[in-house]
Image (cartoon, rainbow, N blue to C red; front, top):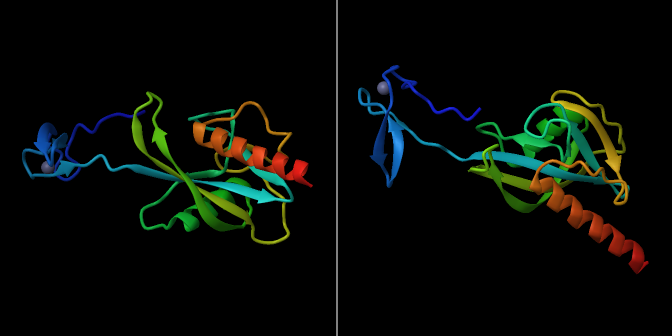
Length: 176
Ligand SMILES: [Zn+2]
């Protein structure tokens, strides 16, 4: 999937490897265009309601068939909270309030190369509605208590955040 550009997107001249700004980058010998491999930015949400976390089963790669926290790539011009609200609405039809950012994870492609960052936020449903419908690039969606987490989770970010959350929930139970 991660194919390199071969032609200049401005003038269609074949690109060459050039040394610019301390790195080898693809550049156009005709018009001077330089291709910068900008970091990809994704947002994910730990949406909690009534002691349960919202998980979605992915219908597309990466992680097709596995459960993950809802989220996705940010569009240019979006702020993280807006991107998360859009993604969760697209994936499960739920309106959410986005809270604090809780972690930043490296984003890796299928070959294990770092290509960007994943911003994780705490969130909750905007209203009393808890109903979720799998849509878009999701095949299933649901709420899971700390002892009901499915074993087939995608992504280190989801695994880390779910483990932390489940541990804090169980500690809270034993404290009371
Ligand atoms: Zn060009």
